[in-house]
Length: 92
Image 1 (tube, helix red, strand yellow):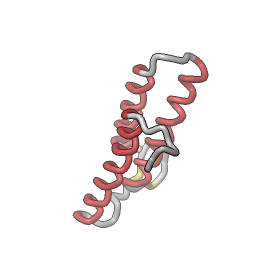
Image 2 (image 1 turned 30 degrees about the horizontal axis):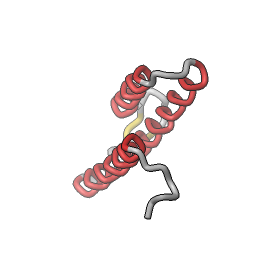
Image 3 (image 1 turned 90 degrees about the vertical axis):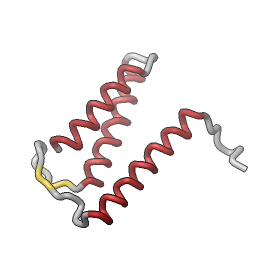
Image 4 (image 1 turned 180 degrees about the vertical axis):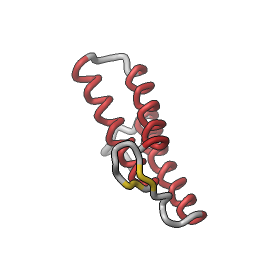
């Protein structure tokens, strides 16, 4: 059924993680509507969804830059990406 795409466990976990984060944002939005609007370090007024998008976009850039400049292994950019996500939800 899904033979058109090479589904591996890392790929499946990535999609499960992204969809879980979106599901968590839906639950948080139902509990407290408004998206938790705040102004952060970048001077932008962002909601939870904006911060998730910024963190996912930054994570993809971190991994692409790492692969282009250094290559394997990918544990260091994973740590940088987690730190970037924590920063985005804490300060942006």
